[in-house]
Each structure stands twice: as C-alpha cells, then as structure tokens.
Length: 106
Image 1 (cartoon, rainbow, N blue to C red):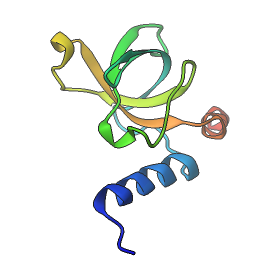
Image 2 (image 1 turned 180 degrees about the vertical axis):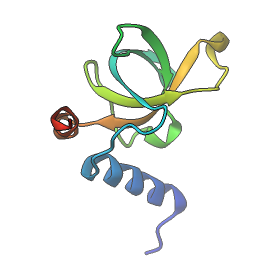
Image 3 (image 1 turned 90 degrees about the horizontal axis):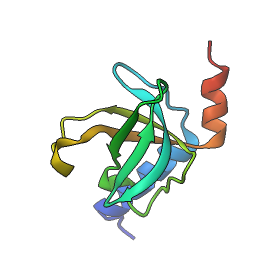
C-alpha cells in the first residue's frame, strides 16, 4: 500500500501538531483565535490586544481544526489577499497540553 503525497502531508501535519511542542522562533508570535472569517482567514488577537487577520495554509485543511479561543503560532505574512489586509500566516495550531508547556517556560 503506497502512501500518496497528500496522505503523507496530512499524516506529517497531524503528527507534528499533536505530538510536538512547538515554540515561536525568530519573528513568530502567539495569537488567540477570535473567529473564522471564512475562506481560511482567521481573525486573531495578539498579546498587545491588536486584531490581526491571519491565513490558515491549505496543509491544515481537513487535518487539524481551530476553534474560538485556541492559541496559534503565526508569523508575519507577505500575502496580499483580502485587499492586502492579511498580516500573518498561521504555522502551528496549539493544543491545550502545548499551551501548558509554553506557559511553563521561563
């Protein structure tokens, strides 16, 4: 049973999301999901309370879901969609145990 490329990507994304403990690196930052705007666009709030529009890459589609109140790791985006208002790209969706791990860090 050969694994197709899309199955491999889905499996890799799922395993990384569930079993890893990602931490923001470089210019990445943590945001809280306020609501979905549709079309893989999420309205998020950063630590300063500023509202941002973030895009959820297609690799997460139908593999990992995000709900209101979830924490995400995002990085500044250069995507010029939605009249240039998208300001970040989501790179990780954090699960409760991953959030607990990040809060325990110094």
